[in-house]
Length: 140
Image 1 (cartoon, one colour):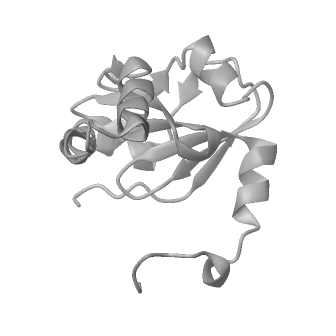
Image 2 (cartoon, one colour; image 1 turned 120 degrees about the horizontal axis):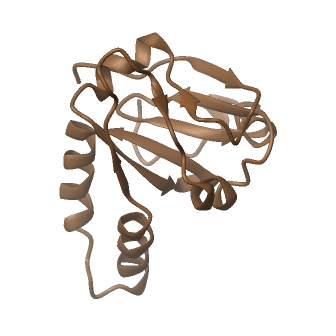
């Protein structure tokens, strides 16, 4: 993974264009895709990570209603974007903000291969979870 997205950046105005932190900009040099994502946030996918994700989603069994629903929500909410050279601003569609409950202070969180835009209060609640309390299917 060439450009890991790490760290957190806070934003005061949820309806203003999102200004990417300098450390996030290189990951989006080839553009990206913004989507509704898990746990009630908006995900920003760098182009290579989006391609990898779509490959994994393509492997979901279409015979299962939840597989079809996941694919439908993800792809119907997908919006491609480009970051202009020297610019760092990205408009997040109102529908995405509404779906994620972002109507005040917001937080952009690095999540490795993508970034997540959260309502600040919801992000704080999720961040209070202890890593050792999370049920994971494999040992890390």
